[in-house]
Image 1: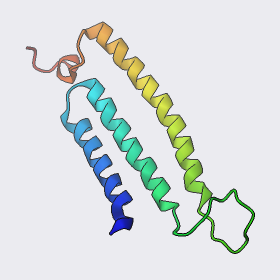
Image 2 (image 1 turned 180 degrees about the vertical axis):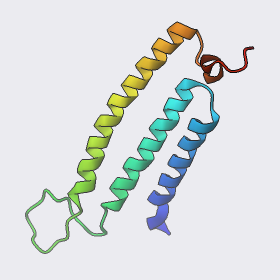
Image 3 (image 1 turned 90 degrees about the vertical axis):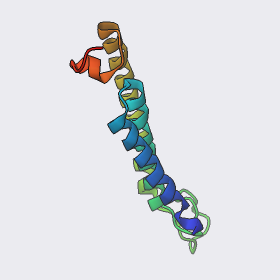
Length: 115
């Protein structure tokens, strides 16, 4: 049971992020949901690369020890860097939209029901 905790955390992060993206109307909350989904995917990649009793792949001291996979770690590092850049871009778009429309509500931006 203890080994399923990271997978349960991944499922919770992705589900909470999807809920925020689909059901929230505030642009900042939608961006937070996208970031939660990204964090869930990063945790999933790291969890896939884990091997019980393994050491980091950078150590060369012992030949008989199993090493963890370095590819998921490299993919996660790349994903974090790309995610930060995309987050900055989304937030700059939100600032521009707020200056133009004076609101962060998606319904008012798209031209839905005017209140």
